[in-house]
Length: 471
Ligand SMILES: Cc1cc2nc3c(=O)[nH]c(=O)nc-3n(C[C@H](O)[C@H](O)[C@H](O)COP(=O)(O)OP(=O)(O)OC[C@H]3O[C@@H](n4cnc5c(N)ncnc54)[C@H](O)[C@@H]3O)c2cc1C
Image 1 (cartoon, rainbow, N blue to C red):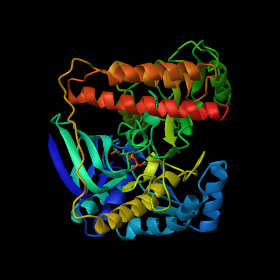
Image 2: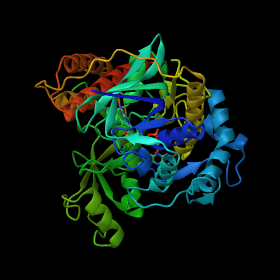
Image 3: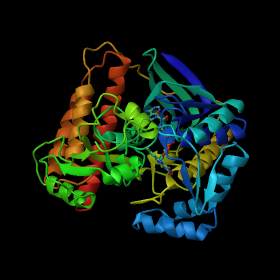
């Protein structure tokens, strides 16, 4: 078992984590970032389209605030929205002036150049380079499993070194959770970095307040074939010209689909393909440079020139998560959070480009406050009892994880199956119990075990919120 100690521990190597790490290092403290996937390179930020909105390009902070309020459906924390609106201009300016990020300014948004699928690297690369110059340390692949708590305060995390299979206990004076959203609780999503909401689930297990987990945004249509998530709208006019058919062959218009999904969500029978349709793209010039690149990346083994592609909605963004205050503090002392794993900033919805600027504003705030508190705290973080995970069991929880995700897709996703929410809740509880009593035998199996804990906990909480809201 490995034991490490740091001043500020950041969980997550996406934009929120990188910005928080730099803020912590600015105060001269030891900052350690752990990530279960490669920091800066394998997360939702790295594949983001690079649109960062805010009070820039002729939009005032008050105008941006109105946009935020309009999208939130009255569910957001107004203080957090005000902080966000008023700090967007400064963090966007800093991106270029301090970190050297290149962008083009438009009305109310800046656009960072990049090409599919790694369009967000123009943001994450300069930030991680800067973090290195500030002495921030990175450890990956390391997956956080549980928070360490002592006398009601957070004292770091315990997790698994996914390369060696060793348990790792990291004691920290302050911890910042930046683990991204939870669109990955569904089998069909466009996120990167295994976004199963581990940080939200970990915070919930430790008793932190969470909110708005049921607000999930779905992209209209993505490819359901192939390995790479792909929003079909990226094909531009070729997508619009493609002929759409339902699974039974009936032609459909895109505008009909939400109605079709609602109808299909009335069945209590599990059907993992219930939201699927077929898009005929055989007329697209797949030999042209742009389309050939997409085909090779996204559908290398699929005869897209001759067969319609299976498409379905893709889970894209989650506005809910760990409740924070304006400094990024959670309800647990010494625990902070920032980025897509938090809730309250957006309520039910957000304007385009606001997710990235949220990571910058609250990443910076949370990292700074975590470091400030760490500096004012005891010389060493408190010790906590840690039981190592013993990877000698015979069980692979991956099928349980996949089943949990399929249940959530069927009953609580793009359209809620009102009669099925209880069916789903019961099955999630059974899968969670089976997972808890299973004994993984390898780091990959432990990862699935941990993600099963996250998916079932978040799913259950989401269903509870939906039922309370009358779904
Ligand atoms: C395809 C796509 C396009 C988008 N385009 C835009 C856009 O143009 N503009 C915009 O504003 N928003 C966009 N978004 C949304 C935006 O990219 C995300 O909300 C944002 O990048 C989230 O950043 P984050 O730092 O919170 O999380 P992420 O960037 O997802 O990073 C999460 C990190 O946490 C790590 N992690 C998770 N769990 C654990 C664990 N248990 N232990 C250790 N590490 C863990 C992951 O490995 C990863 O490093 C887009 C999203 C997608 C998927």
